[in-house]
Length: 211
Image 1 (cartoon, one colour):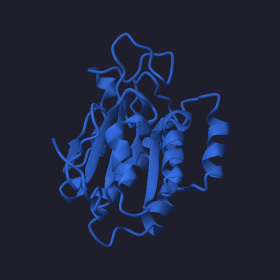
Image 2: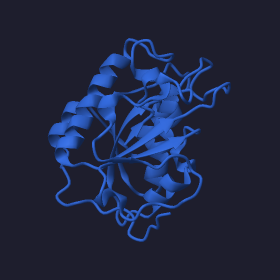
Image 3: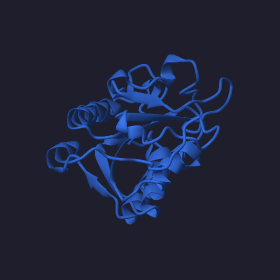
Image 4: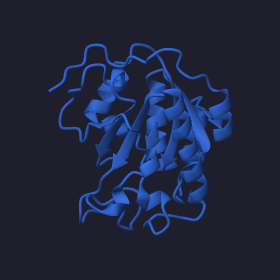
């Protein structure tokens, strides 16, 4: 699962970019290469801020809808993907991962569990899964995903060198909360060399409906 892997955060010239984000972006690319090669299902979230509104991550304008800064990094878009957009309802395509490797959700909110379609997808998983998380930001995005997944009894691995905190003052406290939820921080190289790949096609959402 990648959270807010967007140009304003991870590409030089982006409004929230910092030089240290370059290393995180490189490791995110490595994770996507691993997922693509191994057939690992990917869930992605994209933050879209309305023009003229203050975004949740900074006082600086960021991820403004319709601007280059809101775009996902091109190397984090897999060939077999579907964008399910905003949370207008909870409808989902039936067994979406039987056809697609990547499902993208758009949100105005850093807490992806406020997205009705995403919440339904996770809630209706037929068994506990282990999620690998990367992206931004630790206090506003990553933490909410970890808490939501752990509260639903899923395992969580944090790619510790593929996440950024955007200099948020609550980053350290948020990291401690993440660790307290029994999520495992691992370096990217260990994830791609040691975590087992799916032995079968992962079936998500057995009884979903489509519009």
